Length: 223
Image 1 (tube, helix red, strand yellow):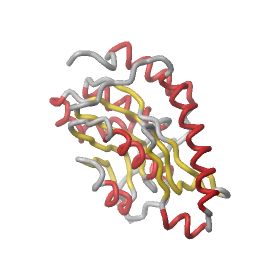
Image 2 (cartoon, helix red, strand yellow):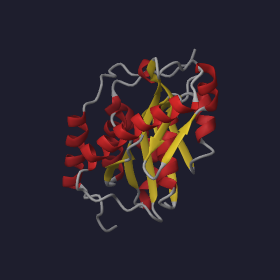
Image 3 (cartoon, rainbow, N blue to C red):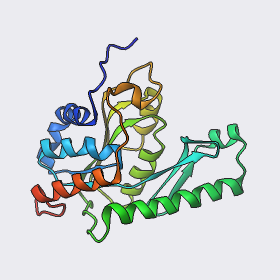
Image 4 (cartoon, rainbow, N blue to C red):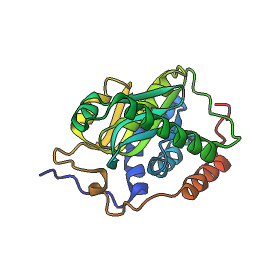
C-alpha cells in the first residue's frame, strides 16, 4: 500500500505541484489547464510561478455504454485517436468509432467557444508550456492535448498532474519533455480516490478562475 496521503482538494494539489515546478519559473512559462478540474489545479501553479494562465481544451471519447471510460480523445488541430486495444475489447466498428469521434469533436468546439470566446489564444511558439490536470488515469485527454500543443512548436512541454497511474506515466513520458506528478501510487484505481474533495467543477468556475488570472497576469503579457 502506498504511503501517499490524499489531497484535500484540487487547490491543495496545485499548491503541492507548484513546489515541484518552481525551477521552471525562470523560463517565464505559460500554464495551461485541462478543463475542467485541471484549471483549478493550474490556477494555483500559475500564481506560484507568476505565470499567465490559459486553457488547453481536449475532449475524451467515451465508450458507448461506459461514457466515463476514455477510449480515445480529440483536440484542436485535427488531433483524434483511439486506443486500439479498447476498440478491439469493446467490439467497436470503424463506423461506430467515427461517430463517437464526431460527437467528441462537437463537444470540443462547444467547450472552446465557452472557455475562450473571443479571447486570443496564448502564444506558445518557442515557449515553455506547463499543461496541468488534476490526475492522469488513462491519459487519453492529456495525450491528445499535448499532441495538439506540439503542432504549435513550443520550446518545451511539461505535463503536470497531482496523481498519475504508473503505466500511464510511462506512456506519456515519451510524448512530453518532462512529466511531473506529486504521486504515482501502485494501487491507483481512479483519480478521485486520491482526493478528499473531488466534486465536479462547473464551466462557471473555470471561467471565473480564468478571469481572475487575467486580472493579475494577462495571457499575452510581454515577458
